[in-house]
Length: 133
Ligand SMILES: [Zn+2]
Picture 1: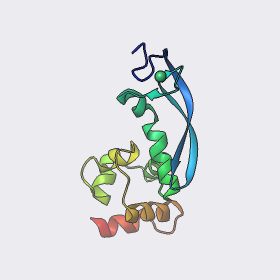
Picture 2 (picture 1 turned 180 degrees about the horizontal axis):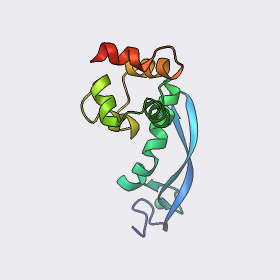
Picture 3 (picture 1 turned 90 degrees about the vertical axis):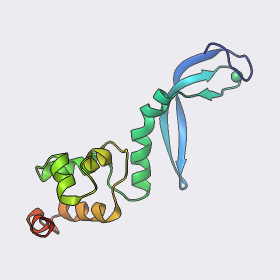
């Protein structure tokens, strides 16, 4: 796109700081896309949206009090298990942890609570394995 379909103004591909609001909480994110230099309209492609998807998903998780993708991964690694192992023990389908850790899907609240308890050593992973398998 070279001309704005709305005002015929000049279009530039760049990154702009954008305010993203969720449940009355806001963050500033750098959103790349095509922007009109005249009317300031933004034209975002699937690729542009994908570039901020993880950041937005983690922001929502923080607002909703869920572990972020990095926190979830850190705790899983602490247990020294693969994504497949974790999915087998905690359920949710073979690709469950891949989905949670890439923010494709948010983990369930019970799983989130369980991981927090494991992380703070309130529950041992051995206890879980004993009842899970
Ligand atoms: Zn325009």
